[in-house]
Length: 148
Image: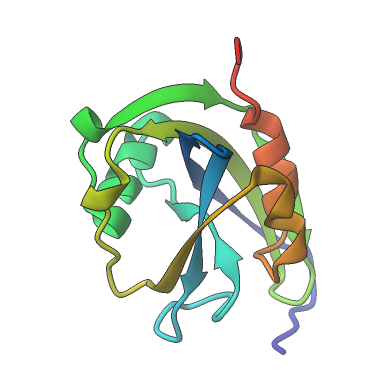
């Protein structure tokens, strides 16, 4: 593991949870990160990426890049307050902007190179997986969606 001395560098990221209702209850999509990504290889995550524009625009961009879904395939259900996740091993202070999108047609999802597997999980099962840091806390910011 790489360690860094001094204060952690800060990076703003979006974390976009894709959600759907089924006859057996709500499901959240988790994606297993590939060996080709720069951090947290093999860990489970939601759609995520570094903020290069506004967080809202970045959220839609990351979902399109990583799943092939367009804005028309999604309904924004919740936007959470940013939360800070510090990873001393990477020397990184992540500022996570969480989102929850309802997916109209899950069959349209096509993973890109950043992920090797996808699983639709009961939201409470997220904590049972080896995830990127702070994933359960980010989910708690947006799920359950308002009015559900």
